Image (cartoon, rainbow, N blue to C red; front, side, top):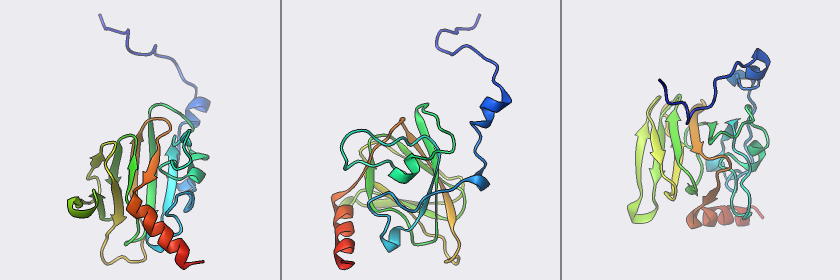
Length: 187
């Protein structure tokens, strides 16, 4: 006899209900705004929210990992303990160093991506290709960047999975310093 006490009861789901849980990639619209570093030329990227990424509650310094714009428009609007999205950008682009309150996992779909962690003397990185995976624990500063060679005008795709229902992100002090420098130079 099976132990069923930790599993939900099996139920029959309609096609209409399941259609609300399907996101065809070709139909998705992302956003290039909504994060503190979005306007920096080296950070230009499109973030696409597929599942979750509810706006974090509380302190205004914290933002949704895919940006507050994207947090308002998931393709599949569920809260089941994880978030799934994509980052699409050209080589040389990616976010500044940041941290999350939950796990963040990256898997390149196309291109080559550098995933970095730590700052200063402890800075390190790993270069990943399609279907390679790196998983950052909470409290680890991290960033990623498309480093594909020979395809300067081609955007590549990175899968992003983050634990929780409303994960929080914040940029490091050095990242905020770069944002401030950029804003001051454009005023």
